[in-house]
Length: 221
Ligand SMILES: Cc1cc2nc3c(=O)[nH]c(=O)nc-3n(C[C@H](O)[C@H](O)[C@H](O)COP(=O)(O)O)c2cc1C
Image 1 (cartoon, rainbow, N blue to C red):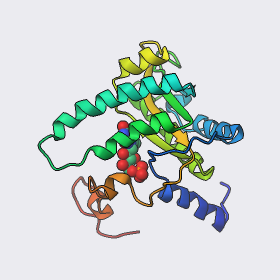
Image 2: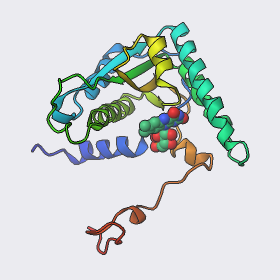
Image 3: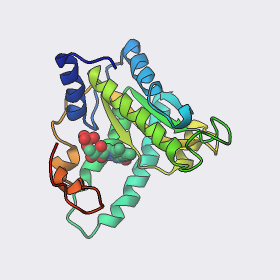
Image 4: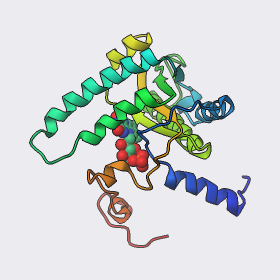
């Protein structure tokens, strides 16, 4: 295995720790060479049985972005009902919808469960591994975008049939994510949900067990 230089290693960790989910974007266009590298990074993700179940729909037309923003907002409004009697501040969720309209590019990442035929190595046991593979591709895109100085936001507030209708996606294809990409002048150093007191990062010690579920780890390596 090839070893990274100390500087390269720090670069990888910097991308992992500093990458953020972003909701506000500048209208500036994105360089096509950087976009190609981001897509190539997705395409080099691991996938179950090497099935590569992904496709990427590059959405630049304003009308399509507006249509997507509408169905995402519909879902946000439906979600808001569940928080009516709490003190949760849902206003910031609306920002994400504006993000879809603002960002110069939205990418719909899809999963094709039929990509490699009936018997994909490894997927026979856990069918969701196709979707897990697409998630790996999306995380690669997120890190590559960070390396390119491009912000990315993952939107999953939608009903899949709505997205299929707007983008002409066949019924057996899963629209896994809508990703907004663009430059931004607002890149927080912590998750927005933490900044808005919605969630906090859990203590790692509570999450790591030793040998058996629930047994706290005794030593730290
Ligand atoms: C599978 C998945 C779905 C997500 N869907 C949404 C979404 O619909 N709307 C949203 O505002 N953020 C969404 N996010 C972003 C998360 O809220 C965000 O990753 C989390 O708050 C941690 O913040 P960070 O990514 O900046 O570390 C999603 C993230 C993942 C991994």
